[in-house]
Image (cartoon, rainbow, N blue to C red; front, side, top):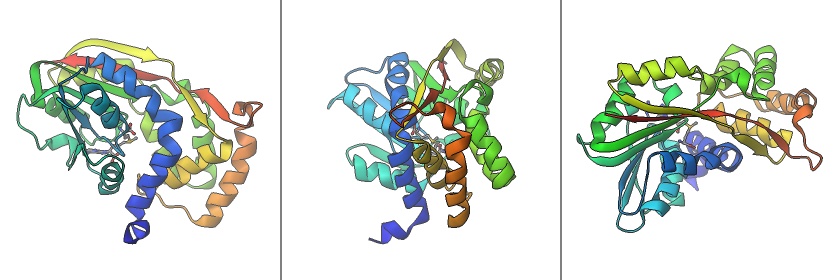
Length: 265
Ligand SMILES: C[S@@+](CC[C@H](N)C(=O)[O-])C[C@H]1O[C@@H](n2cnc3c(N)ncnc32)[C@H](O)[C@@H]1O
C-alpha cells in the first residue's frame, strides 16, 4: 500500500497507464528491427522507463537471450519490475552506465536521449557497452512544430501554468533537428549508418486523457507538480483548444513523427 503514497511511483504508473499505449508502444518494433534484435541476443535498454521496449525485446530474444533495462528514475523501475520481474532492472545514469565494456549484442533507447544532461557522453557510454559488431539504435521525437497537438498544449501551459510546465512539455522535442542529432553521434565517435524519420500516430481515448497524461503522468516525472484546481481548469480549456484533433468516435488522434538513428562503433 505504501507504494501508492510515493509520488515517483504514482507518476510512473500514470505514465504507464496514460502514455505508453498512446505514444510509445508503436516504436518498439521499428527500434528492435533496426537493431536486428533476434533470438538469443543480450540487449540493453537505456532510459527504459516503465519498460515497454525492454519487454518487447524480451519477447524477441526468447529464453536463451537476456534483457537489461537501466533508468535513473526509481519510480519508473519500480513499475517496470512489478510488470515484468524476469528482466534485470538497474538504477543508473545514462552518462555513466554501470556495465562492462563490449557487454551487449545491441543497445537500444527510445525517447530518453533528450533528457540526458550530456547526450554525447551517453552515446559514448552506449557504444562502450556494445560488442564490436552490434548496433546502437536510438529514437527521438521530431521537432515540436512537426508534431501535431503538442504545440497547442505547450502554448496553453505557457499562458496558464508558467514556463516550467511549458518547458517540461517542450523538452521531449529538443533533438528534432537531424543535423544536430547526427553531429552528437559523430562527436561521440559513432559511425552513423542511418537516420530515418518515421510517421507515428498518437492515439488517446479522449482530449482529457491526453492532457491528463501530460499533467499527471509527465510533468511530475519532470519535477513539475500543478495543483488540483489548475489541472481541472486546464483539462476543461484543452477540450476546446485541441478540438480539431478529435475523431468522430471521441478519440484524439494526431501525427507524432520520430527519428530513428542506427549507429555502430
Ligand atoms: C519519455 S521516458 C521514455 C521511457 C521509455 N524508454 C519508453 O519508451 O516508455 C524518458 C525516460 O528517461 C529517463 N531518464 C532521464 N534522464 C536519465 C538519465 N540521465 N539516465 C537514465 N535515464 C534517464 C527517465 O527517468 C524516463 O524514464
